[in-house]
Image 1 (cartoon, one colour):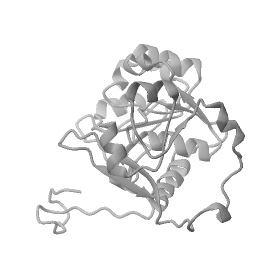
Image 2 (tube, rainbow, N blue to C red; image 1 turned 180 degrees about the vertical axis):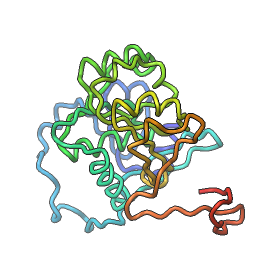
Image 3 (cartoon, helix red, strand yellow; image 1 turned 135 degrees about the horizontal axis):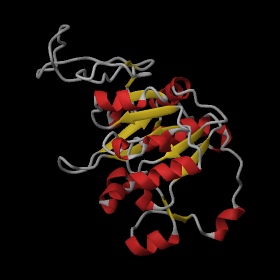
Length: 255
């Protein structure tokens, strides 16, 4: 899978650590080892326009991330600076991120949602808390203890794991995001009264998130469906039939 992604993306360089590179034996035109002391010799200032081979525009590719391949071969989804910035800017304002925010970095780096865990926090001056022990991600009790110990204020936690985390372990949260799968009304009723809760929806190909719902109502009907919300800024959503024709209000279709 890694070899396929390197070849398919035509990557100019591979950035990793010596231990991982020695295990995988991957090949790339250029390999950069982060633990190589030679890196200290390079300048650390931000890249200036004169150092670029071409001008940077909003339509340039910001990142390329590969889908899981669960329905076949993995596909590379490219997102532009314009799309990435739009999602980051919306997240900062919607989630009220600032220099005092303490955000959990829970998702795998290979998962597109990690982009919106990382970039909005760093761009707003907040602190990002990384989980070094991978087993914590699989253990709701351990994750709860991590949140308490670091007084996490913002977290994006999968709906499937959220019910298993003791409610008292989430008392430091002022903002909770769910997404990636459908949430239940019971989940909203349990958590939305203690913090601002948002439901986020979007495909990998559209810079992670295209719709936000929230803050969700803790008094919502127990039989109701949790909404995915409205399109984010500078974004439009269409409901189409099987032939990609727009559908009127009240008819079911595909986003």
